Image (tube, rainbow, N blue to C red; front, side, top):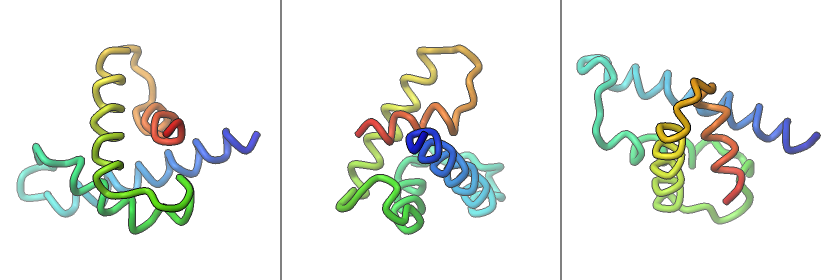
Length: 91
């Protein structure tokens, strides 16, 4: 049950991150080839212990890239924030 709560909380944070990123990159319609770096900084500042202590920004960047690749390979139309949250929580 706690795992589902963690996935839900992290999914919600990922959605908020996406919205904040889109606002930050409004002039380019959200286009940012280095988005994992921006997301990692935002997430790190807002995680509040969701991934445990000591998660680094570079670790988050790698996890986000891994999640992006896995989601593209799955090509199952799943909700990306939930999909990414599960991968981040598996760290």
